[in-house]
Image (cartoon, rainbow, N blue to C red; front, side, top):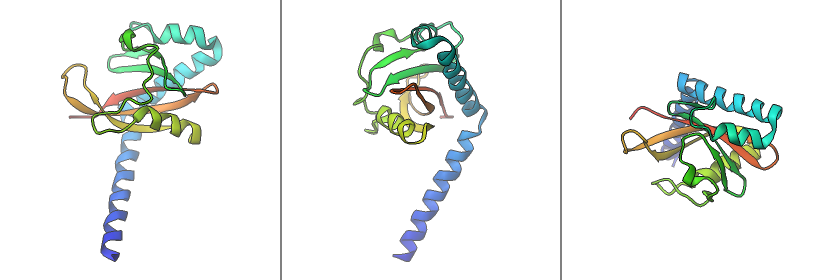
Length: 155
């Protein structure tokens, strides 16, 4: 039992180290900075203008694979900078990643508890079409929304 607990502790420590490294990588910094920029835009301009700015795939909140998304706490996707406008207005709360993880629920839980944080999940890479790991920085927006930006890790 003692050996098992030692292995569990080592795995938890390793996961924490990997997460900490990802949180300070250049991609992680870029994602977090874009979320902070969009959150400031929201404070200065309100929700309607923020949604319009985020939904512009050539706008200030899109930079290659980096784009802002906004979900209400009920799971409705209200803004996304990737140009996939058919997903706007859809409820993604119960949408799992390929492993069955309800990543939008996790995003909402994190911002409700801590105000901001990181969520890792599987997602189809838009260029390769392959399943890839994606990390998203998320932050509470207003009283009932989550704003975020993610990036793909090396495959």
